[in-house]
Structures are given as structure tokens and as C-alpha cells.
Length: 159
Image 1: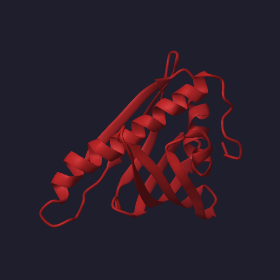
Image 2: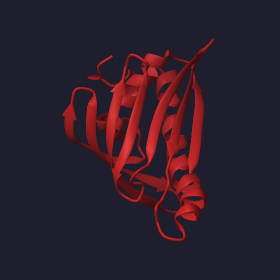
Image 3: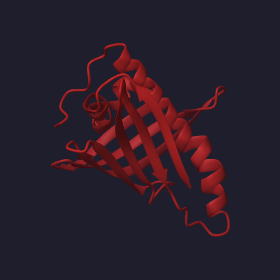
Image 4: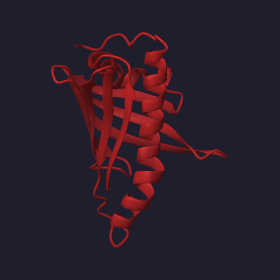
């Protein structure tokens, strides 16, 4: 399963990077995130437990996973490797491409579900479009809304 979810934001790449890198602050600024627990941190590397809701209009479907996160301010780029949960093994990357009037932000997800028989189908037709891409899109739309409304970037992220 491969997804690329993108949005254009009228801001400089480092402003958006600060939002992406500050995962432990996401529940304060991203209403669909239930919690993010910082389990360990060494420099720009974190181990986080994350929980979000996937809104299906009539109900929220709770999801949870654990990930190793690396913040690379000099590029800028943020990467995640899911180390627990249904999406264990998924690689995630936040990319920031400067444009004339802002930045194109893309969240890339790659996952091979190693479930017997149905893994490929489940990843491509259920996990990818119904959960991963949907949650990434909700995240990007909210970050865009906050930044373009002048909301300050989260504190405490090394740049």
C-alpha cells in the first residue's frame, strides 16, 4: 500500500515542519488525535504512542499505534516507522517542497501487511484509503487552517 496525501500551505517550510515534528502537541491542535504519549526521546528521535479517531460521519473509529519518529530539521523532513499496532512496519514521511507562495506538504505512507491471504487486499483497499489517507488528509487540512489563520507553531521543537 502506497499513499501520498498533499496540500499547499501559504507558509515557509520550517513553520509547517514545526507542526509536524511536535507530535506530542498534536492532541491540542488536531481534534481527531485522542492522545500522543512520548515514551522515549534521544535527541531528534522519539518513540511515541499515538491514538486518533477516524470519523465516519455517524461514528468515530478509534485507532492506535506506536512509532519511532525522527525529526530532521536541516532538510526539513519528519519520518516515522510504525513499530506496533495493525500498521506495524509502515514507513511514513512528511516532505516539504517550497513553492512560489508557500510549501507543498506531502505525507507518504508505505505499508506491506504480512497477513496471510488478505494482507495485500486489506492494506490497499481498507487500511490505505479508509484510514491512513483519510487521517492524513484531516491532519493536513487542520494544519493548513491553523497556519493560514496565524496560529503560532507549537513550542519546543528544535530547528
